[in-house]
Image (cartoon, rainbow, N blue to C red; front, side, top):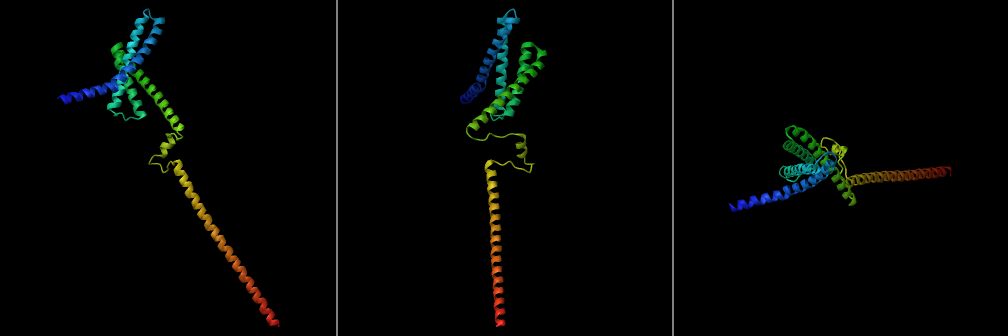
Length: 227
């Protein structure tokens, strides 16, 4: 029993460390942003700007922490922290929609569930898309700094990598090896042509020598008969 209790406590502490604490930090960031924006807006539009700023900060803290906790829990327990950028995009969109719908319904009433879900799903989609783009650009810059070619993910590369397409994308080493093989084949053909030319030249020389020999023998026979 004690061991099971300790295991449960360790699981809870690990979950708190990996999900709840980052969610609270993100919620604090969004809450401070909401507090600042709410205070500025409240100065111009509300008779009680302090109260409006506090309400805005609390609302954005709830939205930010709930979104980040939902996103982190799905990525950890659904994908086991082994997720691709496309997976993070889907999860962030879903977490944004779920957060916007639930918090909007709790704070502002049932009519705000659907608009809140749609709006924050778009926020999650846009935010994750921007992050993925920046992360990919950073990765390529790091690879270029290390003199390594960045990974290509263009449409034609993916098409050529498909097993249904009878072409193959060659790396620089494979292309260099193919050129060397072709160069060796050309050199072998040139050597064969040189050998044939040399054989024909020798045959021509031998033919000329035989012709000259026959002419000399004919001249000798003609001179013998005249004597």
